[in-house]
Amino acid sequence: MSDSSPSTPSISSAKAVADTARVALRGLDAIRDDLAALYRDLHAHPELSFAEHRTAAEVARRAREFGYEVTTGVGRTGVVAVLANGPGPTVLLRADFDALPVAERTGLGYASTAEGVMHACGHDMHASCLLGALGLLADARSLWSGTVLAVFQPAEEVGQGARAMLDDGLYERFGTPDVVLGQHVGPFPAGLIGAHAGPAFAATDALKVVMYGKGAHGSRPEASVDPVVMAASTVMRLQTIVSREIPGGETAVVTVGSLNAGTKDNIIPDEAELKLNIRTYKEEVRARVLAAVERIVRGEAAVAGAEREPDITGIDSFPVLVNDADAVARTMAAVGAVIGDGQVLDPGPVTGSEDVGLFATEAQVPLCYWLFGGADPEVYGAAFAAGTVDQDIPSNHSPFFAPVVEPTLTTGVTALTTAALAWLDAR
Image 1 (cartoon, rainbow, N blue to C red):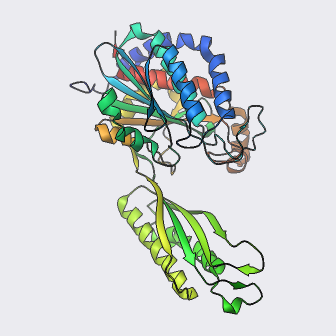
Image 2: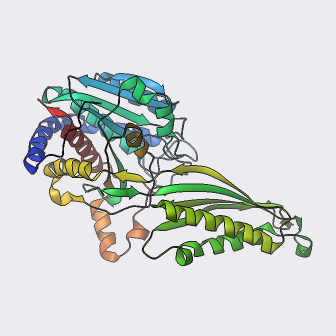
Image 3: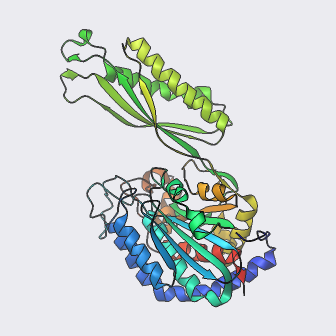
């Protein structure tokens, strides 16, 4: 990290950055088709968390071709690409690249070829955009001074990849950044950018709950302690936490994403398993929700006459992502000067979660993490006019989610390139 972090620039400085970015972005036309082909290839070959071997190899190959010093296997399957270009700040640019256990239903010609695995969250787009930015920054190295530290992170979906890379000596091996920058594609019109200062992405707690009953024949429920009924009652009661225990001015989400019990219609099983996902922004709200979950789960088991206490265990967790206000102002001023100020919005806090904040927290440097749209603008506009956005525009993690190639790619590459130049020293 440099001796002093750059201060927030004036509007005139943002204009100067934009002028530099426009020069760097002249090379985008020459690589746009190749980036689109890369995106389609990554989309067709998704890999789950910590199994991103093919993806990592392709990312590493391309980054080396751009002239970066590349190291693979960081944090198991992560890739780090470094371009040192004289004295100046170190700018960390991050993209994740793992997929989800979702069966794709988009019908695209480049749909997933891996059964039950899909890039349903846009990480293929993230990796493609970062590679595009790396190529442009390498070609424009005469315009800037400093170091680009590109981090292609595995296992974001399970909340373990950022920590794995840090624990593998990311900063000890490659240097500590002055700022952390990144982006996430979302289900709003392509061409738009959204950034929110302060708590921007929610914390997550994922839990597994096993409720124990007593099995019996389906014809003799009186001989059982039915865990299916126990679980069903628990699901319904859990829905009252947000509506009846959290103040109206606070935000919390409690979702039961999985409920499994039994094997056959005429057998009452011994146990039922639930998987919960909890989103909060404040520690006091988080503590209150977790306490309510435990009280309800144990209470429903007791009411049902269960002879064994339920098991409640953690699956994974994400901290709250907090964007530095000055970093957001600095970065978005430059990005807006390139793509148009009217294209940069404040979406407010979102209840999705991200582990990218760990990179900034570990280095004690500012974070600016933004959203960029991936939906077809015309399709989104029609859905908005009809009031059917939630029904007609697939969201992240949907089997129908797939960002349109353009203008999503162009916007993502433009934003990352410009954001990097807003923090690197100009020559």
